[in-house]
Length: 477
Image 1 (spheres, one colour):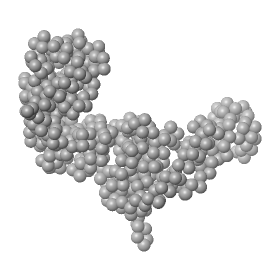
Image 2 (tube, rainbow, N blue to C red):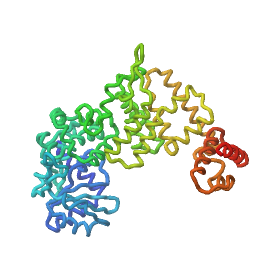
Image 3 (cartoon, helix red, strand yellow):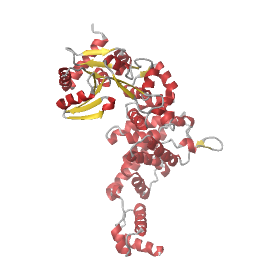
Image 4 (cartoon, rainbow, N blue to C red):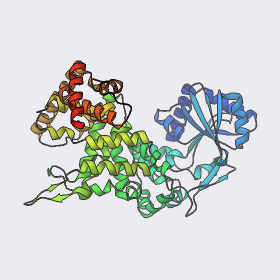
């Protein structure tokens, strides 16, 4: 009977051989040069799970300069990720490899940069890995591939458990970002976390403050883009990690929804996120902009909460406040400007649909809705639909039907008027010619006037637009 470790080893070897045969040739090259090479970490875990991708991580006793020489002969292209960190990367066909010299790294109490030391053995290298399921290796330069599992990674993989090779406090002290990584693996793999790991995270949340905003952003993005971000976000909130880099989310726990249909706005937010994910196939698959907007759409509520006489609570203009908070927080996390702009705009617009009652939409209102959303129209459709979390089935069906009607109206007007290309009936050049004026702020004001007419009444035609423009111009002078 095969032991779990032997079975796992054979599965990992078989998967690697079938999906990445080039790795064998790379190992031969390292062995010929007198060095060791082992597949390590996530790829070993994923090979056992049968989900090996095209990005492979290796560890070796070779110095980075030696790795670079070998890769230059094996790969189509080679680049230096950072000699100081001991990692060299290369690409051959569809396979990308990162090869890291045996090392250990740790953060000083007040430093944002890790101290990296090259090691001499793979055993020492594995002892400093984040979790047991990532501390397995497949040594490829021995006569037969050798599976190395010093910390029962296979057992924890089978138990769907996230544990550290040694004391979790030591692991998180070495690299505090590992606390967020635990949340990421929960979300990606649907695993549970060892109680000792949770205890350590709760006692060490402040250590996250020494990690750069960029690294935190990247780890958080992996969580929110996972199959089940609720798990990771819940851990971040319950352990206090979210208070460090995204305090707007735990603050939602304190706010009671004005409709009294949810325990709190926090729970409503997680439900909206899940419902948005269920709809995002209309965007072609997982979409970071939509997911961030769903998570952040109500963060303006804590600052806009007002008690209503006779009971209840309101959050007037929380979309405006939330949009501003969204920009500020995403800037601190170093998100790209374009995604900050898009997410903030979706947060700003997420209540627009509800401002038009039960479907009494004029053509003018439809035009403005499309214009304000611009290229985010489908995102806004999905966010608005996801934001309906009422348990009243009749009400939910009514809202969905009303939004169906809105989308149908948009499609109809799109065909009639090309709503996605809304512009005045006259160009800037025509405006200057008709009014006999040169480029100036007045041209912009005239353009805005004509655009407002276009939004309100639809296409006017050049003659009607010219007449309206001249009448407007007389009133300006």
